[in-house]
Amino acid sequence: MVLSGKKLWMSARDYVMIVVAIFIFGFGFSAFILPEKVVIGGVTGVGTIAYLLTGKTYMIGLTQYAINLVLLGIAYFVVGKQFVVKTIFGATVISLVVTIMPPLFDGPLVPGQPFMNVCIGGIFTGIALGLVFVHNGSTGGTDIVAAIVAKRTNVTIGRTMLFVDFAIISSSFLLTHEIAKVLYGFVVLIITSYMVDLVINTNRQAVQFLIISPNWERIATAVNFHARRGVTVMDGMGWYTKHSVKILLIVCRKIESVTIFRIVKSIDPTAFISQANVNGVYGQGFDELKFKRDLKLQEQLERDSEEAARMS
Image (cartoon, rainbow, N blue to C red; front, side):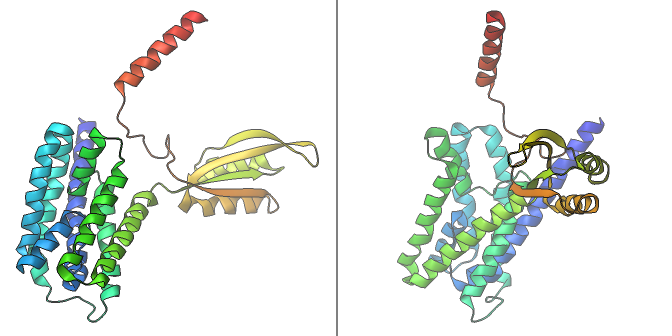
């Protein structure tokens, strides 16, 4: 009962954060990007094209939702029911937000600075989409197209999204006949992509330490008790001195690295320390592997194990 309650709370929190993130997206898009008549990627960009053709802001959300419904209908048969259920909530909320918010802004919040506006807008939209993905959500659009293509071909999801966004942004030239607007669209695409990666990877950023010191036992014990991190002790040899040494391997969150440095400096200021950035650390104390199990691969591995046991 406690576990189900925890799962319910986690799910509710995800939905709340998705809604908050989508409102951040709507603010960045409506207050900075749309007033500059810049077409961005995704179905929001297609909706912007519909707005430029009709002059009606409600066409953005209407077009976006109509396209998402068609894509979700196709995805239901190609990708599966679970993907559709997960996506339809975010697609519905973002369509409502980009319908309601644009009329609230008569012009860009920074008048006369189109480049600054698209940069700020890209930052807001990138942070928002990153938060949506972190909380297991999706806003539909090119996500759906990419999932459908990836299911039927060998083209990666990232490459598909890039191609679709490039085509949408480039098509805006046929309406505006301004190359600057197209370039601004690509600026938004680049900044948004960078911010999405930054938000997604912030919680996963970790560092790896290799520490060599004659006081390795004290350092390892202090890291266990004060930094609350595990330590792996490896055997090594200094080739110049031909002396055996102990090497400490420590993996921790990036924000915990200062604690490790302070511990080492307090015990042995002359210790040799190597620090490297690490992404995607999984296991106890870090991230949980969330990849879906491949049942066919699992069965094959079990058969291989049984065969190896018989051979031995």
